[in-house]
Image (cartoon, rainbow, N blue to C red; front, side):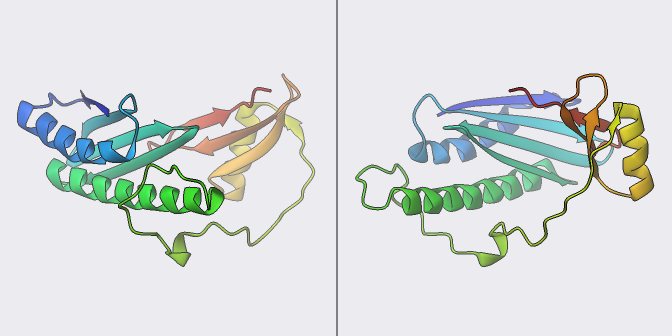
Amino acid sequence: MIVIVSGKNLEVTDALKDMVKAKLERFGKYFKEDTEAQATLTVEKNRQIIEITIPINGTILRAEEATEDMYTSVDKAIDKLYKQIRKHKTKLQKRYKGHDTIRFEDIPNFNDDKDEAKIVKTKRFPVKPMDAEEAVLQMELLGHNFYVFTNSDTDDVNVVYKRKDGNYGLIEPTF
């Protein structure tokens, strides 16, 4: 497993970098050698944030934690990743039941029903053509975190969403 540690608004010390690498390299036994784990350490005011992403076979395992102590943030993010790996392993076992090769041998099965994704409501509504700025206004008026609309410039279905930093994002699908 290849581990890349970088910092934003923070100079990553060797001790911190070694600790993050050591913890992430423990996951190496579950992945191929060329799997790349990206850890980004950030400081914002008094918040110590770590974001870890591991792309595998079209799936991205991602954990983000923010606390007042970077070491605590790292530990919590590693715990989240371990849960995601167990859940991913269980899904693979269900899909490939009876096949010989799954790389996750020693992880216990994950049977946490509260994390199961269930669609509990389906909503249909007319999608009105508008530009992204108008979609942001509509989203704010409705008090939602995202808004689906037809982009009047491209005639494609787009999504605007509110980001954690207070700004807005635009999702434009490509086909």
